[in-house]
Image 1: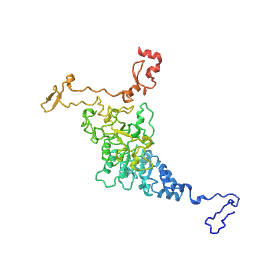
Image 2: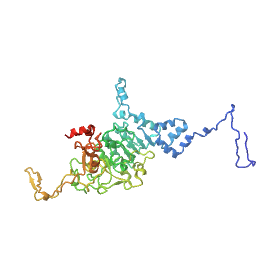
Image 3: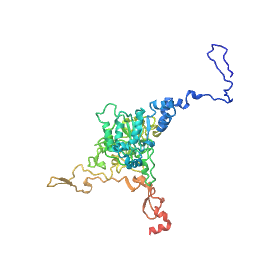
Image 4: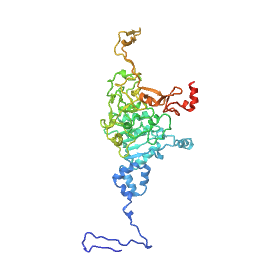
Length: 496
């Protein structure tokens, strides 16, 4: 090997130039030994910024496989805080409950003694409890802040521990499509966690996803009713970007009271309805009862309700009696958590902030309401609706403020009294009912406004019958499916 050294003995820069390659005994070139300085992947992941942005996108199994590579990777994965901050167990086979194997084990006589003390909670939450026990042994359970349990077998007792047990540090919990979950017990646990006498700094949970559909849910079968796919298919920033029904399936009555009790403490992927019919509405008592389809104080009326629809501003006045919900003017804890759950952060701000690509730099807004508050006011086709100040449906009850001169008060011997009204044309004091803006011309289309009906409903020139061009398969713009499939001769026979 030839080398060139500076002539000055005390020169600070001494360079060795390798002009001849290294050869072994077989006269073959030996590549530089870079592995002595560590793996390039290990050096890359040792950067905390790169690790924090990479680990949440890796499945839990991939992170564990990386830890089993060698001691250096094991120390990096298991000893670095934040590697298991985002944990998605919905796609892990070990977290699935194998009901068939459990039934076969129950038929085995040898396992009767072993299953004698097995409770219902231990049976349905066994796979998840096993995973949590393993994480606790490796001191990783406290690092999990975003926990995704969509579609898994989760019991209310396990949710109670996740919410209240100090061993857990879960900030964002997703239970969309969870199985074997007792909703009433879960609601009681949430109400207990948000009680006024709770300890300071509790609960740690800040966002709960339950009412929407999970991202990995199977696509529903294609049906004639296109609205069914819209109910279960979630998109980015649902409440701001998409309009229509946001929740799928029926909800128990306890959820409405739970949303009110947890208001400002825990954010859900929906909110409580603030229509004028409910006590928590800023417009409660300010709207005349005659403008409501269901009058306030009715026996079947409830104090609270879950908002199932995301609506734009009123098509008549451009606002709403309770006001518009905007991201800029509403506290974060009072906004709905947007789907999907955030990956790179477990904060409430990340759960409730819409992406700039969807908002376009503007301040988006929406009106959350339940079905009873938009009954006979909402169009399922174009999502237009009219508020109580702009439109009174014909189905709204008629209330008489004062007695007319022709009204007769009748008192029965038992003490009951009622008013017998006698109408006399224009002197009756009753305003004529307004024309309906929402009609149901097609059973599968739902309630549509007049503009949508003009685009979807046609009158067959052959049989003079009405049909829907969206759901009447085989129809044309001029003939229904029956007349179009039989040609000119069939149309002539049908007419005569």
